[in-house]
Length: 343
Picture 1 (tube, rainbow, N blue to C red):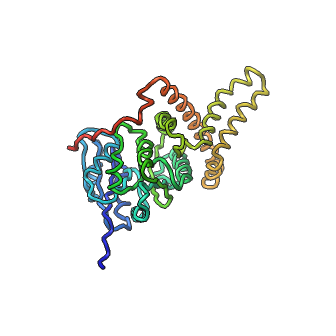
Picture 2: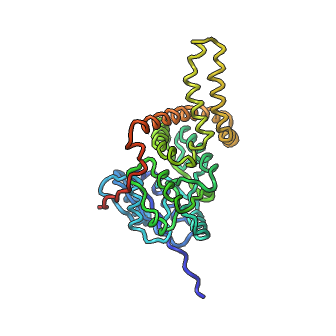
Picture 3: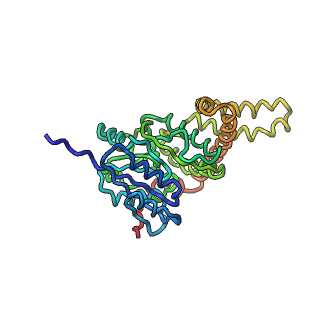
């Protein structure tokens, strides 16, 4: 009998002003061991030379009429895809060479599997700063540690059968910062989601502290309505011990005035809370010490303390917003709207 051809994979790359990394992303796709790939770059109104770079690498380019955001750009890419398997990868990420082939094999082997997700390498795609190195190691440890069955998707790097996408529906374009959580919630009503660390790539992480803290704040706040609805939601800061670590960091800051108000013996309070915050994610700090050494671990610990405080503040802000805003409580009830047409 003639063997059946392997399925065509449509790799969809949403992009907005990532000319700096887009060429590296597309070059990595050209080196994939899997033989049947079409690459679709959805350019979301870039003002740099992203479109020229995409065409130079042989990708099919779809340009949006307005800036619609990454979730809507991914949906638009699906409209132009011919493949039986959809592989979504962000334009600031370069895949390892065997990733597409491995993802196809996983999906083919298990019809109950709706989505397969991957992780980031510990080294960034383009190292720019100590903050970026912090973010690279932190995300690598958090995501890799969730290997197995999960309830969210990691939207920068995931694959699914086209028929599953049609059944579950498009990503919600109204959720530019939390579409991964909402989409994972929908997928797991019908299918399993699995994170496999062999699906991996190097990512160009944020290299400024203000940007990193801002993203942590907005994503943690926006996830609160989903956490309240689905307590089994997992991944990253949703891990219960990490949540307690964030709260301990915030209370450590609040406890700083106690020695002044109540006497030196109260120095033990912020010190104990700081220790509790570190203990809540001790495995991460040990990993960083082994990987990067003690001096960088001290820097990493200071930055992550700020992250923990930021996340805790975001949790309280999100909880307050849930109490005061019916619209916010029902964020994840918003219907997915069709993306605007491309130019």
